[in-house]
Every structure is written in C-alpha cells, then in structure tokens.
Length: 81
Image (cartoon, rainbow, N blue to C red):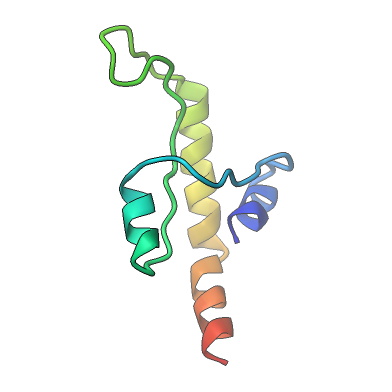
C-alpha cells in the first residue's frame, strides 16, 4: 500500500524498508499494522541533528497521497472480503 502511495505521489523510487527499532515495531509485534514515516534528519538524537526540509515536505506529500487515494480504507475493505 505504501509503495503504491509513493507512485501516486510521483515518487516512483519510494520503497519500504523492513526492520529497525521504533514504537512501530512494538505495535507490529503485537499484531497492529504499523509504519514509521521519517522526514529525513541527519544525526538524529544528537546535538548536531538537522532537518532536511525537502524530505520532510515529501513525507507530507506521501501521507497526503495515502489519505487522498483512500488506500487504507481500500486495504481494510479488501481484508474483510
């Protein structure tokens, strides 16, 4: 669903990356589908952390694509059928 949203938002090369450690992983391990969307920030959790504004904006566009195309609703309905 998220790779489809990336394509619909004009981000043809957007790919999911499995793994990592975050609260999303904790939810996924107990059966709650989760995703951790990051806007791109080098040196995270350090005093030299910065924000990549272009990546942050693209993350917003990506989230809007998921909502605009109602991809979450489509997947839930497909799972219920």
